[in-house]
Structures are given as C-alpha cells and as structure tokens.
Length: 63
Image 1: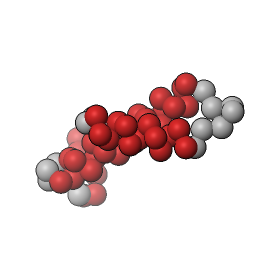
Image 2: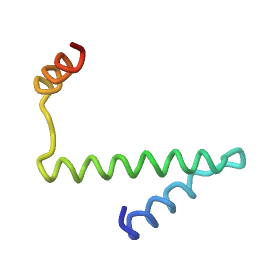
Image 3: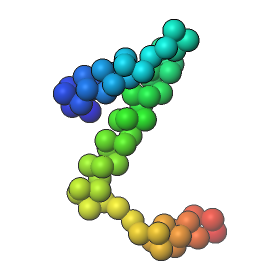
C-alpha cells in the first residue's frame, strides 16, 4: 500500500472511531481498505475472472 493511501485510510478510520473502538477494529478496517485497494488495482490490470470462470475453477477445486 502506498504511503499516501495509508495516510488517507488512517484518517478515514480515525474519523469513525468511537470510545469503544479497539486497535483490532482499526486493524480490521485498515486491512479491509487495503484489500479493496488491491482488488481495484487487479481489476485495472485485467486480473479478473468472470462468474463463469469462477464456477469452472470451483468445480475443478472440488474434485
């Protein structure tokens, strides 16, 4: 994750913290935002599968 994105994500998370928030909550949110960012980058690079491709691969894995 780029430093700029990290800072942006931490600010977003900090704005939503409550007194009950824990460090684990922050980590989970940061991990989720990082995963979304990575997925968007994969999509831009064309590294995606169609629903039919996923179903076909799933059938192979379940054999």
